[in-house]
Amino acid sequence: MKKLFTALAATLLAAAAFAQAALPSVEGEVRKIDLDAKKITLKHGDIPNLEMTGMTMVFRVSDPALLGKVKPGDKVQFTADKVDGALTVLSIAPAN
Image (tube, one colour):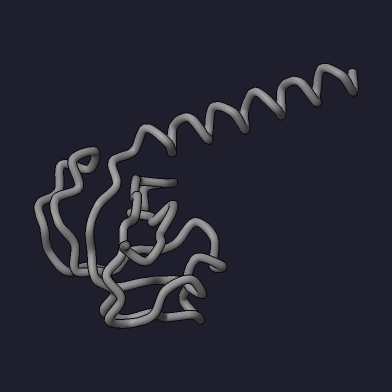
């Protein structure tokens, strides 16, 4: 049973990593960070997987640690998707 659970967990993690890797990287600029609410405001370009044109909006983050990687004014590359019905940033890093 333990081996089955371990194999299932590994499969789920691999599927999640593949799904995130398939998401388009989007250019944006950090406008605001709300650590208490675990949200970030981004001015961003088109997000094809969400069928969204460029705009400024608030996203929640999948991991609050992402908010420590950037600051307001930073140009960034990020991925986003709908998670439990909410628009969510899954990865973010300062742009090169």
